[in-house]
Length: 598
Ligand SMILES: *[C@@H]1O[C@H](CO)[C@@H](O)[C@H](O)[C@H]1NC(C)=O
Ligand SMILES: *[C@@H]1O[C@H](CO)[C@@H](O)[C@H](O)[C@H]1NC(C)=O
Ligand SMILES: *[C@@H]1O[C@H](CO)[C@@H](O)[C@H](O)[C@H]1NC(C)=O
Ligand SMILES: *[C@@H]1O[C@H](CO)[C@@H](O)[C@H](O)[C@H]1NC(C)=O
Ligand SMILES: *[C@@H]1O[C@H](CO)[C@@H](O)[C@H](O)[C@H]1NC(C)=O
Ligand SMILES: *[C@@H]1O[C@H](CO)[C@@H](O)[C@H](O)[C@H]1NC(C)=O
Ligand SMILES: *[C@@H]1O[C@H](CO)[C@@H](O)[C@H](O)[C@H]1NC(C)=O
Ligand SMILES: *[C@@H]1O[C@H](CO)[C@@H](O)[C@H](O)[C@H]1NC(C)=O
Ligand SMILES: *[C@@H]1O[C@H](CO)[C@@H](O)[C@H](O)[C@H]1NC(C)=O
Ligand SMILES: *[C@@H]1O[C@H](CO)[C@@H](O)[C@H](O)[C@H]1NC(C)=O
Image (cartoon, rainbow, N blue to C red; front, top):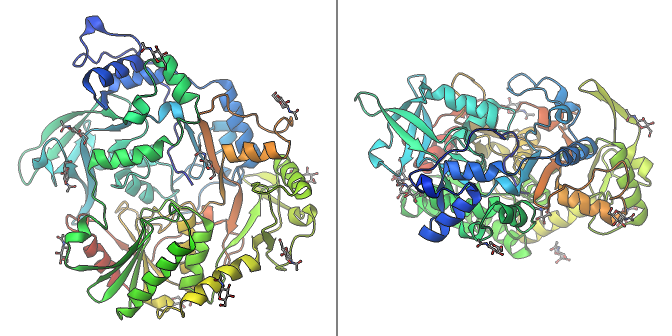
C-alpha cells in the first residue's frame, strides 16, 4: 500500500515570485520548471528555491475531468462515503465529511498527482514536543544550519505560539487519523512517512518561516528560514521546461511512485538516523537478537524483550522471511525474557496476510481477523456480479477467497454475498453486503506453517504491552486492535497533546485498500470500463487515488466500524529530551507498565 499525502487544495493564484539570489532578474526565464532545469544543469543542484517550484507547479491546474473521475471513484467504490458524514465519536477531532460534495479527501483515501510530488520542502530544522511541569513545549530536534539551536525551545512560529501553530497544522493538514493527538504526533514525526510540519510534501504557503527560539535562560531571538525544495536526479533528468515536465511527469505512469524514491531522499536530507541499526548499534543497553530485513527487529533490554515491527509491507513476503521472523521470536524466547514490548509505532500499514500471521503466531487461541462487509453501490454490484460470472484471476472484485462470517460456508451466489441489509449511515440509506471473513482453508495454511516451525510462544497476553505513537494504521491497526480487543493486551500511547488526556494507540483500521489503477484494470478485465455507470479513467496517467473498498467491524461491539471507533490506549507516556533520542528509555518506560492495573 502506498501512503502518500493528499495533494489537493493548494492551487494558489499568486503573483510570480522572483528568486533573485539564484538567477539575476534580467536573465529570468518565465517558466519555473525551466529555471529549475537550468540550475540543475549549471550548478548540479538538487535543491531549489521556493519561488521556482511554485511557478513550475502553478502551470498545472486540475480540470473538471479529474474531479469527475474522483467523484466517480469515491461514489462507486469508497466504503465509508456515507458513514463519514456522521459526527465523530467522542475523543476524536475530525469533521463530518461529504466527500463527493467537498472532494476533500480524508484518512484512508489518498489522492496524488505526479505533477505535485516531485519536490519536498524543508527548512533544515526538525522538532519534538515535551511536557515540562504540565506545560507542553515545542523544541528543536535538529538544526543542520546552526547546531547550537538543538534542544532550544521554539516559543513562536511566525509570531504565533508554536504549540498552537503545530496543533493547527495537525488539525488542518494532517489526514491520517481522526484523533488530533495522533495527527499532532504525525506533524512532528521524525520518520517522514507522512507530511510533517518540518518536511512538507505540499508546497508551503509562503517562501520562509520565522522561528522564535529561547535557549537555556537567554533572551528570545528570531531565526528566519527559507523553504528549500529538494528533489532527486531521476526526476530532475525528466524535464527541461514545463512542457516536458507535463509530458514526462504529470502525464506519465513512469513518473509515479515518487514518494518511494523521495523517501530515501528524505532520509538523506534530514539525516535521520535509522532507529535500529543506527543508534542501537552503539547502545550497550540494547542487545540485538535478530532483525529480519527492514520488517521486524528483536531486542533484549535489561530483563525484557522488544519486538519492533517496522512495517506490514515488507519488500518481499517469502517462506524464508516468515521463517526468519518465527526464529526471531524463538530466539527472543530463548533469552528467557518474561515480558515483551511490542513496538508498533510509525506503521502505515501493509498486507492483511501479515497481520493475520502475527495474530495467529502471538495469540493462537483467538480468531485472527475482524468481520468485513461492503457498501453495495450499483457500480460494485455490477463489478462483483460480472466477476462472479467470469471468474477472472487477480481481479479485485473476486469474492471467492471469502466465506460467510456467520455460517463459515462458501457463498453460493452473488445474491448470497450481497444479502439484504439496508443500513442508514450519515442519514443515507444504503445496501451493505453480508459479513464475510477469510476462508478457513486459507487461515489453516498459515496456522499450519507456524505450527510446523514452532511450539506456541511462552508469553501470555498479560506479558505484552503494545507501544505506539498512534501512527499504527491499516494492517498495523489490525494487529494492535486484535491484541487489545480479543486478548485484553495492555496498550500505551506516547506523545500527543497534553490537554487531551486520552490518545489512540492506532489509526485508520480502514478496509482493504485499492488504487485507481487496480480499479480501472479490474473493470477493464471485466469489460466494464466503457459502462456508463463507471467512472472514466483520469485524464492524466500520473494521477491516482487510493481508497478502502470494505468496512471492518469490531467483534465485541458488532455494530462498530473500526475506522470510526475511538480506541484510546490504557496508558500514556510523553516524549522528553532523553527518550526522544534514546528509544531504549522509551521501551523501558513501556515495559515498566506491563502488569499494572489498567
Ligand atoms: C543533525 O544533522 C546533522 C547534519 O545533517 C547530522 O550530522 C546529525 O547527526 C544530526 N543530529 C541528530 C541528533 O540527528
Ligand atoms: C528538452 O528536452 C526535449 C526532450 O525531452 C528535447 O527534445 C529538447 O530539445 C530539450 N530542450 C532543451 C531546450 O534542452
Ligand atoms: C540544509 O539541508 C540540506 C539537506 O541536508 C543540505 O544539503 C544543506 O546544506 C543544508 N543547508 C545549510 C545552509 O546547511
Ligand atoms: C540510552 O539509555 C540507556 C538507559 O538510560 C543507557 O544505558 C544508554 O547508554 C543510552 N544510550 C545512548 C546511546 O545514550
Ligand atoms: C469453498 O470454496 C473453496 C474454493 O474457493 C473450495 O476449495 C472448498 O472446497 C469449498 N468448500 C465447500 C464446503 O464447498
Ligand atoms: C438496494 O438494493 C435494491 C435491490 O437491488 C435496490 O432496489 C435499492 O435501490 C438499493 N437501495 C439503495 C439505497 O441503494
Ligand atoms: C506442515 O507440515 C506438514 C507435515 O510435515 C506438511 O504436510 C505441510 O505441508 C506443512 N505445512 C506448511 C504450510 O508448511
Ligand atoms: C482485561 O484486563 C483487565 C485488567 O487489566 C480486567 O479487569 C478485565 O476483566 C479483563 N477483561 C477480559 C475480557 O479478560
Ligand atoms: C497500484 O497498486 C498496484 C498493486 O498493488 C501496484 O502494483 C501499483 O504500483 C500501484 N500503482 C501505483 C501508481 O502506485
Ligand atoms: C471502450 O472505449 C474505448 C475508448 O473510448 C474504445 O477504444 C473501445 O473500443 C471501447 N471498448 C468497448 C468494448 O466498447
